[in-house]
Image (cartoon, rainbow, N blue to C red; front, top):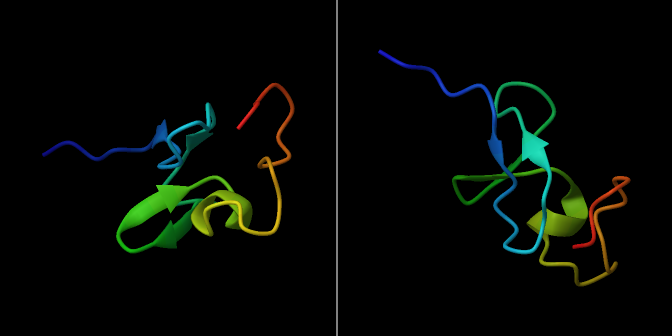
Length: 54
């Protein structure tokens, strides 16, 4: 059995890598790097992580 420890943020334009077991924001079975990404950027443009232009 393989356990996924890192994956790309589920936000299409985001470049961040998330850990589903530590720090990722889970919404509807998907994992995001921030609340902004998880909410579809309704309140903010980007995720706030340096180097990411989502």
